[in-house]
Length: 314
Image: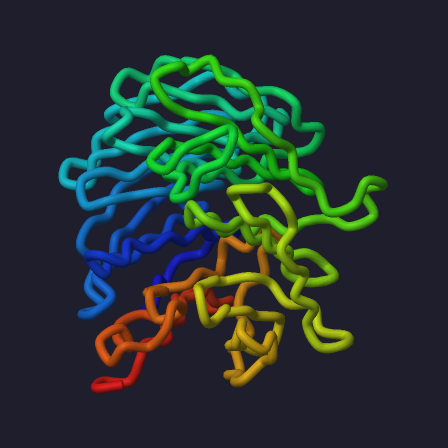
């Protein structure tokens, strides 16, 4: 898909259920694409985007102007503006059922907002670095601190992952802080996976996997010597990884790389915003039905979007 615009910044997100694909750029535009047809569905004007999340009706953007905005796709109207951060907003997530929006910022804080009104309900402190990732997800396991079905908020910076309870009591306290090195000699990448059972994050020495019931590190998956791989997707059987030159599939049962594909010279981003996975259910095992649709997408130096899809009929 050719964008045909000049920009310095590129943000991507994808909605798997409806095969929609989104990008925004520094010309302050945002576009929604249909992956199957390559056609632009909507195009609207926004602010500068550092983080995105969307569904069929709305788009939520975190910005370098320290604010968050909610936009209606059909009209292009800004329906809500969230003000309160004092640094760029690097990550956003929301849940319509809870009417909550969460955001992570360069001001070292996480904020919890009422999605419908824009009111800040709580500011969570404790991070000492930029908060580059927030994830709002239901727990699927029981522990002393949470039960299956409880909503959990994860926030991550360069060295720590913090776990927060989210529910009727908005004023929450951190349940646990996860680290991989006490002296901060190992930094985490801003690619965090949380499925309600396991937390996975990549680092310079490999993939760290925590059990969410106990908060214990289950394993550290170390890539081949000299490889510095970033996490793209993680399942029960396979993991999808990448570096500057290749896309890799790892068999998690053996922790071996079993396949790789050459990558084009894609646009680099320290936060990984220019590269994302598409359909990921096949990472739990191929069933003959889930080998279709988008595998991954990335932005290109020539202002186009590079998509890789499964071959038709597998």
